[in-house]
Amino acid sequence: MKVLGIDFGTTSFSGSLYDSEQNISLFATKENTSHIVNGLKREFDLEKARADLYSFIKYLGDNFNLAEVEAVSITGNMHSFFLVKNNKPVTNIITWQDERVLENYKDGVSYVSYINNNFKSLFSKYQHLVSSGYAVTTLLYLLNLNNIDGCSIHFAPDFIIKELIGKKSYEDIFTDYSLAHSSGLYALENNNWNYKLIDALGYSKIRFPKVAESGTFVGYIGEHIPVLKNTPIYLGMGDNQASVLGTIFNHKDKNKLKYILNDSLTWLHQKPNLFSHPYLYIDLLVLKKSQYFDKYNQQPNNLIQILSSL
Image 1 (cartoon, helix red, strand yellow):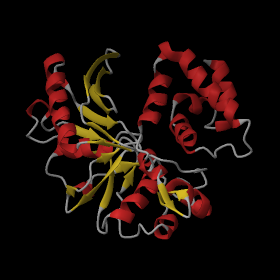
Image 2 (cartoon, one colour):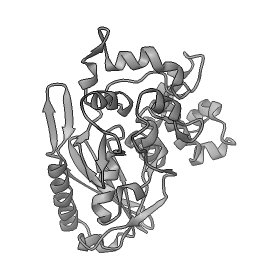
Image 3 (cartoon, helix red, strand yellow):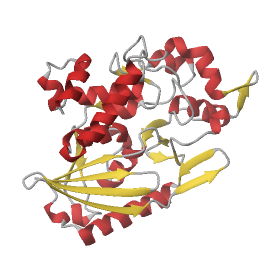
Image 4 (cartoon, one colour):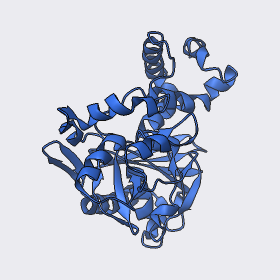
């Protein structure tokens, strides 16, 4: 089976064509020219991102035999989000590097500090603090300036999926739990949006997408992309998690995996709450589904055994 993975990166679009029968991967990269820097704001211009995507697909077609692709999945920019109203984007994609919420909000503190100081008790148990680049903080900035009632929130990979499918409504496109949690507004412990925090921050009139497991079928690529027409798309995951999972199954990178896990272990053993860090927890969720956790009865505390076995 040949699978095409597309990474919507901050500086480039990347593609990997994996042949499972021959265990061979081919790679291609092309510049992402859509990045906008304006003071503390960091965004992707939607029109440029769209043009770059189609240019990248053409580039892939020039270098790969896309007629052989049997499935497509998307990752990239897991914190980056945008707002949609009446099935049309009403903002650019606001990236994970955006720092507008470091500006003063009220009482001499930034948007970030205001939320951390006043709403921490409502955070997911796996969310220690929020920062700039999170939807949970940036939405407060947008709410303070614009009428965003009735908008729905979506993430950077959702934009790519919608462009590939074409006619499907944004409301019918799932997002996966790692992308949802990267917003700061999802509670992994409940596998649901953190509506207590959402309501407390005044976001109750914003609609949030359905969340599904990575690998869930999303739809077929439309006729407007002939080289991939009717190819099924399956839900990906956050780029942090994809990186960890890719490292696990790339046997050439065992030393890199040891470094990643060892660094995580060092950090974990310094903390009373082993799973207080959201991204590490999600990475461990991905690891739990891997062959290494299967070998040890899916016990996260056996990471030391995993390291020694590599």
